[in-house]
Length: 279
Image 1: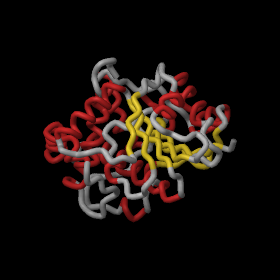
Image 2: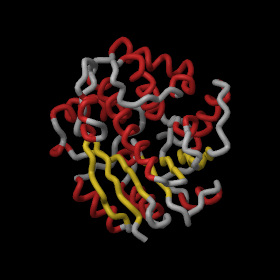
Image 3: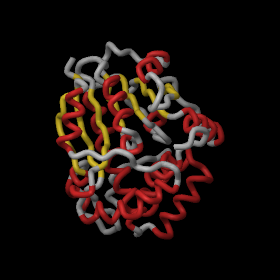
Image 4: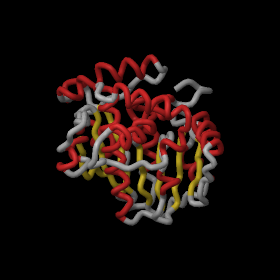
């Protein structure tokens, strides 16, 4: 992203979660009941595109991607971690919907967080006490130092969500963040989304990538990193993280949720890796 501008990709992701409840039919994959209120007028503009052109592969594909991955990672919160770290939080709304009582640490670029705070104020939404904003530039800042300064306890296990971020980073920046997560307390868990190289994508994934990747580059947010599952597992292992599973988008939710009458179809372009800190 550009140094002084908030991420447009973050807006697109939040608007797609909101649009899912407007454009698509039940059963819903994920209910983000706060995204539309948070985004305000900007969200209405993007949601309008989904209303009008919602069957297009990029719009329907984005809704499928962001709802499936959120369904999966928020489902992991039931495993008992008292701290939830959202890396590249963008306009994630779990901190506003949090019913677990645990601490939530939203980590993102300072420009995006400034914009989010302005949107919260405009919408009359007050961040709860359990929510901490942690401004970090993943390419240059010390992630652990920033988290601890915000109240994070590295001695207690945490669930770390890293969705829709790694593909925009260099492998060096990814490795630096993994090395920090590996210093979290044993039992901590990372759920990381990553992009597949072209040879591993399915037909739906190729169709989505054909439109989405050039559009991201035009916004100044090109995809930079791609991994096979084996290569990513090796990278995780080198940084002290043990891979538990790789999850296709189709497998992020119960199979019956893909038995649909709307345009949502799973694509194998990005997968989730779940890994644990072994200590």
